[in-house]
Length: 227
Image (cartoon, rainbow, N blue to C red; front, side):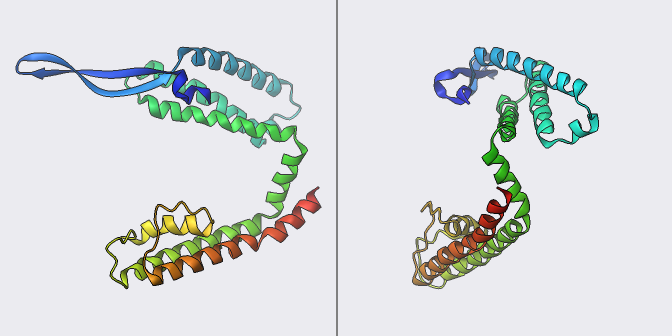
């Protein structure tokens, strides 16, 4: 969204009156930014168009219940309602946190899923995920299992030797490292420094590659069948 770019945002300073030695002084509580007013006008015009489109499609659709059950129609409806919810919050609640309201506007990004109606490749991809649901659930299960196991292993491995630079102060911190390592992302913000810790890290990376690679043939087969 362009409205999140610093060049298209306006600085906003939130102030409050503070009494200091009997004098009222204006103090700055927080300095933030908000989108340019032009984006609000563009969003208003677009959402009026989307609202009319939804109403017309609902009136002329042969099955009203089928319209309401469609995931894409629900996404469109929720995205449109989020705009009006933002407008109500801003108008009625002057002290409403603008960052939270602006975050809720990100729901409208889900309208991109409507592209699946017009792209054959995206439709095949969705059917493939549906057909491979069991394999994907199994993949997630083994990933979670491996993440928990290796987070615990690296935590205790780093404590087995003298290590003043130990970054694994708890198992929950190790979970972040295990996720990055098993998925081969490797941010490098947390690294083991002991011999046992590096051994655990090596095993974690290898097991991550094997775990992710196992369902690939099944998903590829389902892609061929769906196409």
